[in-house]
Length: 124
Image (cartoon, rainbow, N blue to C red; front, top):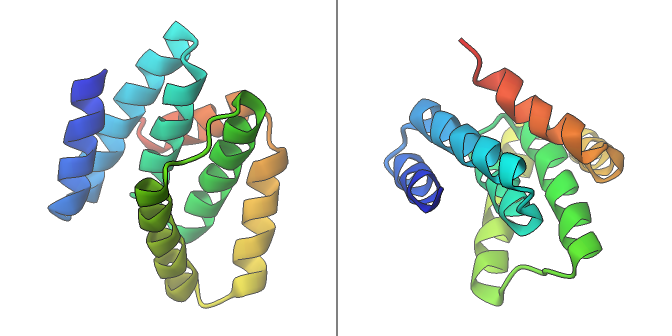
């Protein structure tokens, strides 16, 4: 589980988004099966970092809601990284209202739907 997490980060840092998506999906599958809600939030955020801007916004919204529910805010260093990723996704999309709408959708999406969104994106 930790290996998928670390390898997903490494793949993303190396620019291999496809491998990153697969590794984050693997981590999410394991964390979901274990009922590890904090781990699910981490895996959703990691998955978002390799997704299209709209999908990323939805996943970040879902992770944010989950973190609020379980009382597990991001540590400051991780929050800074997330804010950079969000800003990059906003710029890539070029449409703040579409991004904000997707973020809001993610915040109100049932958790199992957010998980399914990641897993469907990695199906062969």
